[in-house]
Image (tube, each protein chain N blue to C red):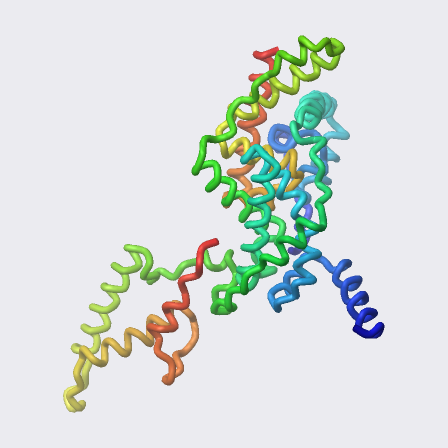
Amino acid sequence: MTSGSINSETMLSEKLAVQDDQQLMLAIVNGSKEAFTILASRYTGQIIKFAYRYVGSRSDAEDVAQEAMIRLWRHAASWEPQGYSLRSWIYRITYNLCIDEIRKRKPVSELKYDNQAVAEGQPDSDVYQEQKDFMLNAALNELPERQRTAINLCVYQALSNQDAADTMGVSVEALESLLSRARRKLRKDIMNKS
Amino acid sequence: MTAKTAKLISPERVKKLFECYGSNPDAWPSDEKVSALSLIQHSGELRELQLETAKFDKILKETDVLKDFGITVDQGFVNKIVEALPNQDVKPNPQFRNRASQDKKSFFDLNRSMGALAASVAIMAITLSIVTLKPENAEPVSTVATANIELDVWMWEQVVGESVDDSEDPLTMLGLLELEEI
């Protein structure tokens, strides 16, 4: 390989790295694996974290993320910039895969609070914080799946309301209804439990 | 995506924003943010409500079970995905590349029972019009053969919105309208 070709490859990589999602997708539609690598580096971490909330283990979440990115590659030509944002498209693929996965097996259910931590003599403040965390996460797990997903997308994944609505395949009004019901229930459950 | 125009909202809507999205203006719809902030600035009640909402937001964020979950991705994992990439699908019919516009189905979409019913009614109407409107001195032509061809052409034009090239089979092209669900 000549230094000239190495330089032009480096320049292409640098050029791709600063391109926005739309530009990268246009390159991916034309078969650019380099553009795909950059896009995957941008999004894979987020969707692993998102998938983890449904499948409960890092390795399973990585499997879901890998499948989501492969589907994005295969169906790249179906995406149009005037339609859904790329972000919501990726999340939608991931969300559908997560739902399929949890339907195949027993869902990740209640967190079990480990009394061992108390027995091992943790400082009281740490134990108190753990109990609070446990209460909220138990309350989150008790939400209906659609409400929990709305909270996951808007609060923890920080998607815009439009992207979250597109991910779930609902209107923004429907998303707002899910969010307000979820937040109301969480507040009530946390107050009851505490 | 085009930027939304800022819109004026009511104090009730501000309360709804707190209820749905929390106290952080960055989480609110972008076109309502300016109006909401202005209303909050001039209302003690809204300011108090925002502070109250912020306390709950803090609990929600801080007790995120994955807040320390690393989101830096091992490049080796990404490379593994790239190595496993299959062939890409061929580009679908450009008329239906937009998933948003895909939802606007034609009334005569044969995938729906109502669409099939509408198509049946259309077939009958066309056949009837050909039979009743045929000029007396016109050459006798098989109405069934004519109706089929005319229906294909007409349906193609309705569904796809473009004229049929005589060299292409409309029914084959109609088959391309079914996109693979992801």
